[in-house]
Picture (tube, helix red, strand yellow):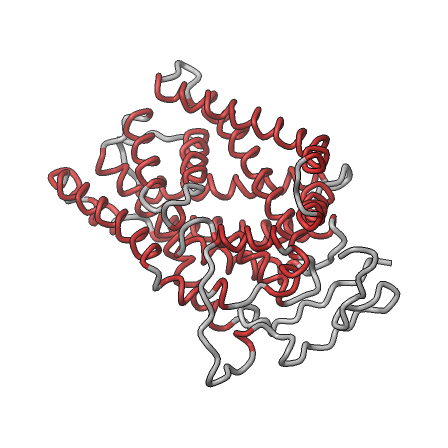
Length: 404
C-alpha cells in the first residue's frame, strides 16, 4: 500500500486497540459460514500457485487465503494426491513380492514386539509435539505475536496431518493459513517463522547426524556413509551461505531487479519473520529445544529396535540417531506424503548396508517406526481435525499480553 492510498475500512488504525471479538459471518473464511446455494465451487489452488499468488498480491494474501484454496478433503480427491500415495504402495508391494522368501516373516516379527517398549516409543515421539509447539511460539514471539503453546501445538499437529496425507509439504502452508484465519497474525511473517524453523531443523539434522555417524563408524567409514557425510557438510555450508546472503544482500538484489513494489513489501514481511524470529537472547533456548526435538525422533527409533529385540541386530544409540535423522531428512522429498516409500527405503538401505541388519529385520524396524511416526498421526490427527474448531476459522486465538 502506498502512502497515498486510503486505509481499508476493515483494517484497524495503528492507534486503535485490537478487537478480540469474533469476526462476523462476512469476515469468516468460507468454510466457517453457510454456503450460498448458487455460489460456484471455487477453484482448487496448487501450493506453488498459491505462493505465486501471494507474491503477486501480498497485501491481498494477508486477508484472502480461503478455506477452498487449502481444502484437505478436496485435495485428497485430486489425481495427483492419489497417484502420490498409490505409486509408493505399488512399489512396496512389488518389493515384498520379489523378496517374499525373506519378508514373509515380517508380520510375525512385528507382532512379537514388546508392547511396553512400543508404547514408550509412542510416548517419546509425542513428547516432541509440545516441544515443537513451544519452539514455534518463541519464533512467533520474535515477530511480535504472542500465542499460547497449546494453540501453537494444535496448529502444528494439524499441519503434520496434512503433510502425512498430501504431497508437496502443503502442511507448512496450511500451518500459516490456520494461524491467519484464527488470529491477527501476518501471513507472510508466519511463513518466515516456518521457513526459519525448517532451517533450524536442517542444521540440527546435519550436525547431529554427522556427530552420531562419526561416533557410530569410528572404527571405519563405509563408502556409502562417506557420501552421506559429504552431503551433510554441503547442507551446512549451503544453509549458512544462503542465510548470510539473504540477510545482507537479499533486499539489495531485489531492489535492482525490475520487480513490482508489492513483491518488495512481501519480502520485507517475510524477512522480518525469518530473522526477527531469532534473537540473540532466544537462540540458545531455540537451539536446545531443536536438539531435544530431534533426540525424541532418535529415541523413538532406538526404542522400536529394542521393542523388536532382534538378537542379530546391534544398533546403539548413536546408530539409531544416525538412521533416524537420515529418515527424517527423506521426509522432505515432496513427491509423496511424508516421504512415503523414500523414508522406508532409506532406513532399510542404511540398516542393511551400513549395519549388516538382515533384510527382514530391517523392514520390520522401518514399518513399525512408520506406524508410530506417520500412521498414528493420520489416525489421531483426523480425530483432532474433526473436533478442532481451528480448521473452520472459529478457534479465535487472542494474542497473549506481554508479561509485566
